[in-house]
Length: 453
Image (cartoon, rainbow, N blue to C red):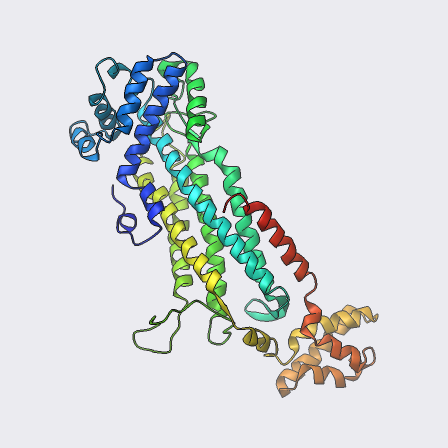
């Protein structure tokens, strides 16, 4: 079943799309059949000559999509058609040993995990690269005071670099999540029709362990005819989780690029147009694309959850949709990572606007620190709170600078000198542990990603 976004080349990298092409999927299945035969010969379960012939046929290029489609048109069974196509390419002595002891979903599930093995290799490298890029930007803006906003309102002072550090930390943790998850969801199954080992008996477990090792996978703990779909759902969720972090980054960039804030701007190349009607528009289209694709990526999780409960040892209610969901998720996430990596690396930060926005409320952003200073002088917290609130609200009404209003207020002035008040209204004095946090994250990212880039 072709998938339009993949086949069209509109989304994702060439390398990612190639993994999910029909030709490559067939080759993964052939490689699995060859790997099983090779291991079975190694433990004297099938003749060595037969295994060699099966392996040769699998690599020959003579088993084509066209031929498999012709055979499937008769059998209406895609895996059976692939097995028959192998049999056509081996001598008579090897034919009995093609697909020996296996069932269709041994092939389907394991080859899918082979695809995802290679897909996660690409994803993991790109997540690591983005984590490092974010860490670099965090260090770059480590000491730049900026407005910290909660509920869309100015709340307190933040290091601008801390924004990037939070994102970098989560991307590093995603690398860890992928590594930790591999043993749970990149699985090999060779246990036959209902998961007992079937014709291979107890030795099926030995075969499975050896094949898994050869293919860079892990043997499944227990299965029916299919690998438990909790494992597939974890893959789907993990990709959606990474996508949600990308969406979080994208939304913050989109907000910070608003005309009223204007602290950042996406890269905008020469000749680019933001609007067909308004020549001055410079829209954050890459971040908006990430947010749009995140919605689709997250929606696929519910499908994977519905695939977990199957009838008895299996039914086909999961089969058709899985031909779409995992490939789509991998390609969409690849596209999102490509876009966000470019945005972060080339993001323009307007330091002057960052600083100017600190003064937008005429100093009211320092209210937290005035409160702290009064508390340290022994003023009861709620008495200090009400005094500051009274002065602040009056300053808003009159348009007065908060510093001036605080300086001339008698209640506050009884406890704080003008010099002490002036020191409070210095943004660089309120970055607190931001610098240390950024440094810690930079080290974390370096340690986690050094083997992945």
